[in-house]
Image 1 (cartoon, rainbow, N blue to C red):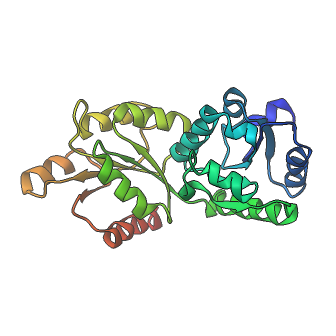
Image 2: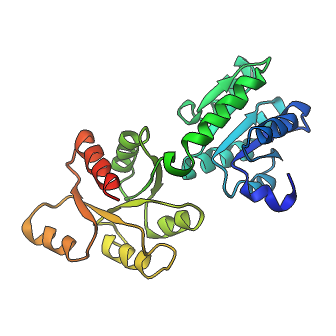
Image 3: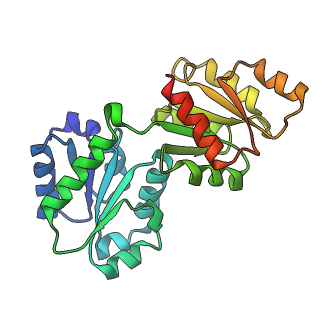
Length: 256
């Protein structure tokens, strides 16, 4: 794949060394129509090729395990952008990597010796499921209450790609690098509250058209009217439970 196309790759294959197997995987994925690129396990190189990535395929090794800053970068990127992650390696390597990359972030683990045809099929299926009409919608949660936000994340993660931000600045930073189909925005936050963040979003041509649902802990008439007056697509009380929230979002997206 030429340098000018590297930023368009949907699958990034990462290895600490010039692995023949890792580089041959690029060709096999390209052969089935999956845009893929190889990257050494270096932050700047990964950053340069992962702009449109949907999944990372990581060849585990002692060299990579000895580079915790790279693993933290990969983990943060996967969490922030809700990317897929396939790990390749033996059980001992997998246990070591779990110290830096939590198991819940791993889409699948392939043991050595590698069944490359099964891997190609798995990556192809993942890309197909997350591209075009089949693509999961992305929901960005903006809330300074990290416990509540992580709870909502757990509710939504199986049905949606989920991003998280604790304030308006983080939300705008996230949206500069990722698309979102809906924002769940806390109405009451310190520094910049929900209405102020909504105003910032609407004043930016890149984010102004993203629909916003307010999250609010207040259900009295005056509070509800003040929320509605800002013209969100909806507002949700924070007492909402998982089935009701999923139903709200499913209904919203089915009508669009």
